[in-house]
Image (cartoon, rainbow, N blue to C red; front, top):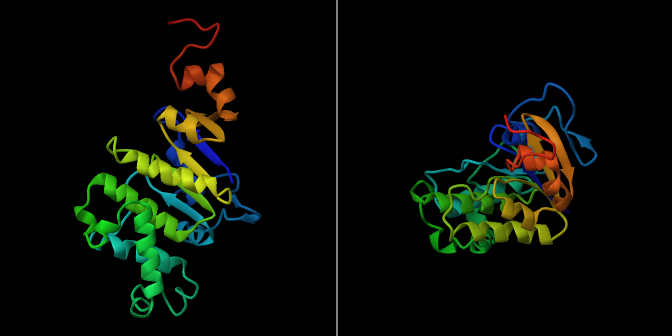
Amino acid sequence: GKLTAIVGPNGAGKTTYFNLISGQIKSTAGAIWLGEEDITGCSAALRAVKGLGRAFQLTNLFPRLTVLENVRLAIQAKTPGAHRNGFNFWSIWSDSAKLVDQAVDILASVSMAQKRDAIVGNLSHGDQRKLEVAMLIAMDPKVYMFDEPTAGMSIDEAPIVLELIRGLKALHDKTILLVEHKMDVVRDLADRIIVLHNGELVADGEPAAVIASPIVQEAYLGTPAAGSQDP
């Protein structure tokens, strides 16, 4: 029910941290738990089925399919029985107007219903980011993982995605992890901030206290900590 922001300078390890959680990288130590379940040994795909949903820093879509088809596939991946007797992407759509309607509703929520028939590879970067969020919503995960969701978006497009994240947070039934460089976004959305620097955890707590801490001022914001001297 909370939104945790993971921040830090370039190279701090934020995306690596996400890769460890979602399974793109295997951990060499420690354990990863989803609720009461140890998922350390699970593949990235199985972690997604169990409820870890991730939007990548770079879009992760089916570029030759339409916008609507991308969202339909995400819904089908979450549909009970979709994996039975193999994963058949297409078999259920002729009989599943309800699922198509659900896909249209999700696209409307990200202001993309009018582009439902567009080929994804022809979309602008901002529209591809919005579509990726739509696919994540379609999966209805327990944990949403957003890796710089507004990166590359125009000043007009970014607020739409931020409002979607704010809406998910308002439901109070999802865990949201957010990697973000924009501190104004972090201040506005985060219930908790984790700060990484050179692969190490340097701060973890409520936003006001973390942002005000000397080590964060120095490591992330570039402000010398009290008592330090310039070289």
